[in-house]
Length: 74
Image (cartoon, rainbow, N blue to C red; front, top):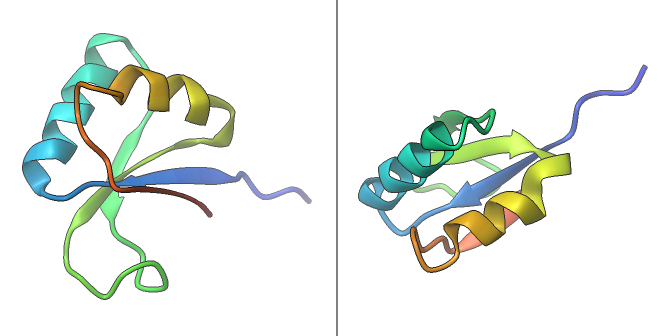
């Protein structure tokens, strides 16, 4: 059984996460806001989760629009 792989984008603040979410909603890109997984960061916060097949597309959409710090595969 193959588990779905995801990619998460981490942002410097919730403001950037919400801006990124708006961009993806406007373009009808499937995504979900989730708590930052503990194995990635002990900080509280939220991140943006997408399917791995969309990681390059989403990175391009967000570039210059909503600054993200890291992209991590789960």
